[in-house]
Image (tube, rainbow, N blue to C red):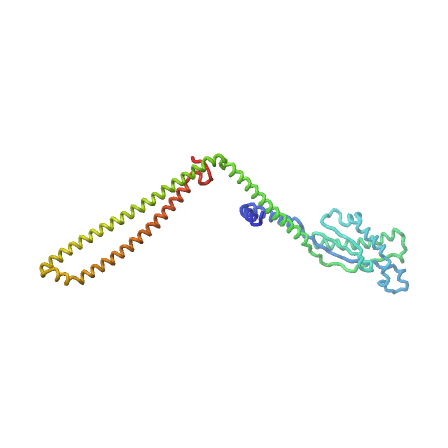
Length: 345
């Protein structure tokens, strides 16, 4: 199937396209409305070395931040444990948090991330996780009965004061729903057009005459068409002949009238010639008038012949045109002209 055929099929099933696009749009709106907007907040904490590691009082703790990776890993695991998560979140399925150790630097950073449906809840959960990190770090060291001078400390490094609005997931799901709906609409329309085309071809094949019926009726239909063509040609010839005869009769009548008029003028001329003393004087007297009359008569004859030729050409065109119309109408009204070889009723 070519792309142009697909386009024509989709245009024929435009109602399927419209219905499918409406459904796809409705589904995308429902997904957009169902997926809530989420907010994210982040905070960073850092472990501090114990006092005994500083040596001299007043030493800089940032110079000896190494060697606390084991304690950071244990704290991260305890904060992500299901027991701690249940204690912090309870039955709230719309809120989540995550605690990871920053391995990109040499410092023992603790990264905390929370996501929830409101900005206020995101900031509140961050604060709760930070308090839980302090409490869990102290608890894990007390359980091992570590002396006070060897206890590792923790401090806040940074924390968001405003949560970030997350809308990418919502838009992605909405666009995915609309795209899937549009693709399914095109597929359904193409399949529907193909099925209807197959059904139409089967119906036409069922109503078509059998090969035996075509063999029986096609010669009859062709014979009738030829007979009508012959009768039409005869009709054209007869009409053309009758019109030419009428014009010939009309021309003869005009010639007879002109001959009568000329005879009368000759009699008048003879009478005047007898009165004035002979034929020679009459001829000399009326010679210019006779020449003028003859010239005028020749011009009229030329114009009459030209008009007659024009009428013949016009009538030939009219006859041919009417004959073509009659032939077309006769062929269009033949029995079985809609379907080749269809039987007459």
